[in-house]
Length: 49
Image 1 (tube, rainbow, N blue to C red):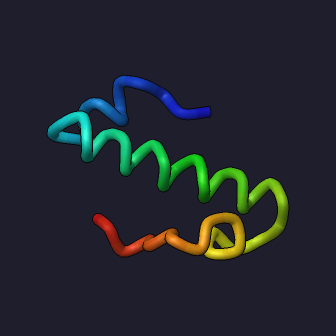
Image 2: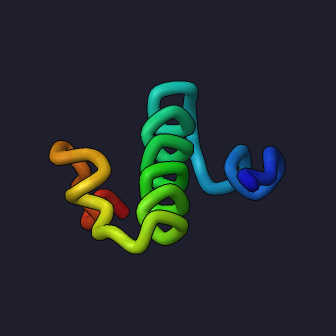
């Protein structure tokens, strides 16, 4: 589950918000499937902070 307010607070604009939501969703799906985030999305870069 992605909560709207924390995402809005952590991001400065629409593009940054989109990237943050993508990162969180990839990480959550990977965790549920027992995979690495890179296996779920090869473009995943967890160092975007």
